Length: 88
Length: 136
Image (cartoon, rainbow over all chains, first blue to last red; front, side, top):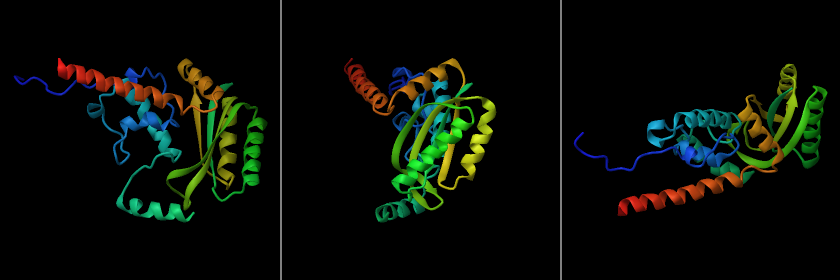
């Protein structure tokens, strides 16, 4: 308690950009809330407000369904993908 | 009549003519089920996030249309039967905000170029403000 917070306060990036709706096809909007392994990041880490977090969650789940982004990223997939994509 | 969006992924193995034929087929299906198509967007060939039926890529199309809710079941049934469609996704736009979004999306040719720029600008601002804070 005695120590002051050294880091800057987190804020919602979507509020900052004044976004009213998040489209699942617009991947650049989803990027902020996705981890490196394409997991949905929690609010306490991203600083999203609740309203936008809920919208992003929905959009991410739709994007997964539409195969815009993967559900999981594992070792097998990392090895598999590049070679097959080149062959096609 | 409600506002809907239909996304379909076609197999990458199809030739151009076959792709055209399939898109026309989907259009016909929609129109038969009393749908008014507002716009059709071709998102082109994209790499899939994960394999679907051993395909690494897919050809994306998005339809924006208005239709009575009762016809959705029939449209989805036909989408499921059609072999060339790897995946489909129907999204309903219900309240005022969503309908506004639908109108924006359906009138614009492409959505992607505009929004990312905004965010980038914001990020620049963030760094500036942080820098100012540090100075202060």
